[in-house]
Image (tube, rainbow, N blue to C red):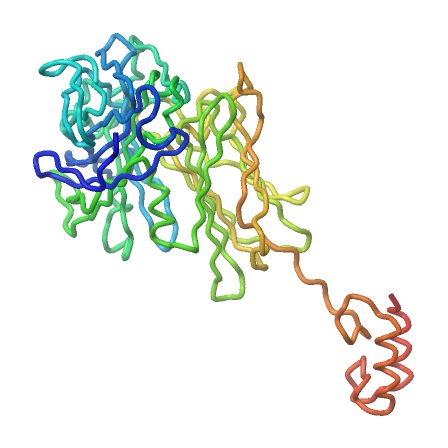
Length: 467
């Protein structure tokens, strides 16, 4: 089944199709569910939590089964249905950050639409199966309905397996009801006066165990651009408007590379027996002669989670403004928002999460993006270097790796200071340099100490630095 470059459902939206990652592209073998479109959004009354004012949003999703087999869509308490997280990202001053995340919508039945092409229906009405080639729209009001939103924690995104009867954590008593379980975003992260020139992107994802078992789970996220209105409302927060096409089968980190082509690199890395991470990186020159290094890691569907991140730093490289950013967990799943600790030792700068003995640690969990950054006094090396993502959960089953090596721009080795007497700058003081000094004797032609004359003092310095 070929994904159309544009598609219309009730005349509401467009969708842009791209090849999936790790799923064989179109006409995948077995079931393959993707976000075919993000058609609409809902807004809810803002509220204050822990001294911060938030708004809450929900995004509609239309799924497409682009595979060759039907997909089960059984409602709770069965776990044979998809779960759907929603995220919001901001690109500001050339940097992408995640600024909001929701709990997961649980599917309950599937209409048999034609958003992504010809549909072989699995039945009439809204059956509990999504047919081959068929699409199923969930409006934003459905995806924002709190009765069907459940925590992300019990879901293994690498396998799609979860307990259909698990108990949701209790929301904090101080959290306003309108914000609970939905995509909460701080007012300051949307305020146009505080975010001049920023762009925003909604991202949604489908997770399903049959899709994962068919190895078609690396193309399940899609994103769409969002604009922010100028006026804050006590009823709905800042008004958001979806604009442009839905970029199918791409997580929102791809928007960073799209905004800065040639400047941002984004690469995917698969952990054997587990899931996929995407690493984005960008290096820019600062006005003060230093360079800013920005790394963004998106955990697409790894259950092992990220637990550390390390960048090699050559000797004599000076780092400043070392930073870390992660989205806040606010809905009661019990995760901390503690920043990762940072150390600079053994030729590297390393950010580290609390160990997995603390089940509530702020690990890089699935469908989230974390930032790591610093300034350095040297530009990046010409070729990509190797950075290391440490895995947080212990090895299990077929996933035995403890880390993932990734390619990214890293600081270069500083140029060595010039050697007095090395006239040709080849790194050695030898006969060639001695000839230059002797040919300039009595003039400035072989001057080493800068007094304007080549004499015995210069010869002594050159000989002391020989080779």
